[in-house]
Image 1 (cartoon, helix red, strand yellow):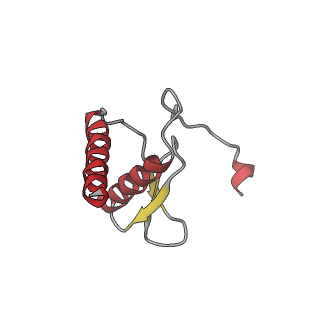
Image 2 (tube, helix red, strand yellow; image 1 turned 135 degrees about the horizontal axis):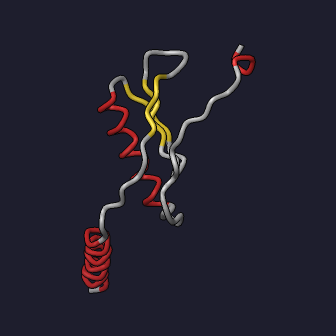
Length: 97
């Protein structure tokens, strides 16, 4: 009797959790994708979570970053408010000589 009741309770809990997840709005995050200096792979980085991955193509790197970030967020919910500010800056010629 308990086994049957426990399964129903477990399934109900899973269904409620899935309902909560499905009701949440998708979150737009930042992807910074750049060529790896030591190989022909692309590095994909998400500054909001710190997740980083790679791929042979832009599409693969982005898909891998999405998967890695979703896995990260399933354990560590996003708490930061706002988006990172992306900009560029110059350094002197001596700095990279």
